[in-house]
Length: 144
Image (tube, rainbow, N blue to C red; front, side, top):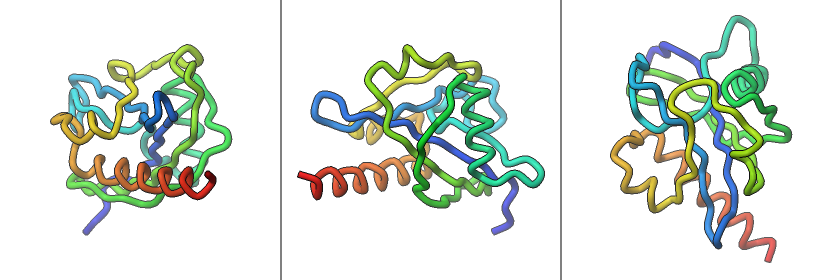
């Protein structure tokens, strides 16, 4: 597969009402890729940027917020030949009060059940969300 675009993507999550919720971006209705879909925050890697540098730049641009700390989930690919370096971090319940979305149609927290049935989240984006849920569930379970 020839990679068209390399991206750094970000998944803020919280543990709320006894389950994990994932904060996704509602893409613009005029976006060139996946218009009006729910997806990850972040964007294209520019020049000699590392994925981590791109992540920080993009999240500051899109949410006026700096992710610190954050963890690497993995590299994923989609049908548009994008290579996605996906990162995540835990956020507080007041996260939406701390940010200001500057791109797309804003954001929303989703439970894994809502993600499962949401038609406007691609199967390629659901995969890392399910894997993150599994990782977090195992991490939280081993701490108890």
